[in-house]
Image 1 (cartoon, rainbow, N blue to C red):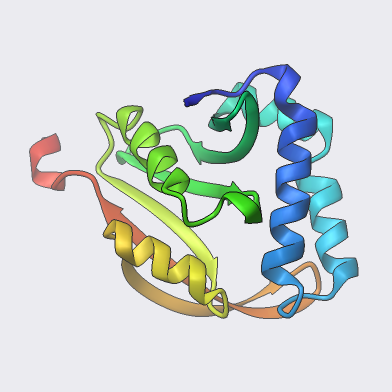
Image 2: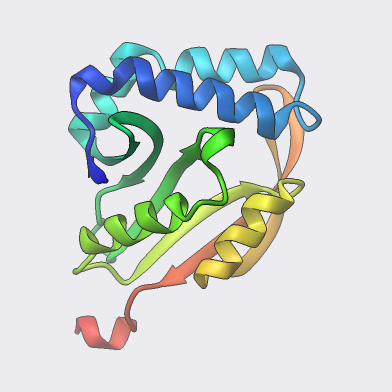
Length: 165
C-alpha cells in the first residue's frame, strides 16, 4: 500500500533512511559523514518540515512502513525534484520502488519534469532510475558534507513543455 506520510511515521522513516544509507553508502562515504547527514536531514523537526512543505509517500508491507518517496512540490516552471527514495534492503527488488514512483506520478499531473540527483558511484540507483525512464543530463563534482563526490543529474519527462502553454 502507498499512502501519505503521517507524524506517526517519523521513527519508521528515520529507521528506513539509516538502514538504506548503511547498505548503500558503506563503501562510498565515511560512516561519520553518513551519520552527520542522517542526523540533520532526518531529525524529527526536519521530517515534520518535509511533511509540511513537500510530498512524502510511504510504502507499507504487512502493516509496517518499508520505504518512502520524498519530492518537492511542483514549482512555477512545472518542475519537481525527487529528493529521497529509500526502501529497506530486505524489501528491495520487489517492485516497491515502482509502486512509490507510480504513486508520486499521480501527484504530478501538472508537472513537466521530475529531477533526481544520484551519487555517480551508486550504480544500482542509477540503473533503477534509467529503468523508470529517467535520462542522464550531466555528471558534476560537488562537496557532500566535506567529501568530494560526483553527482549524476537525471530528468524524467512527465509531459512536453509545449503542452503547458
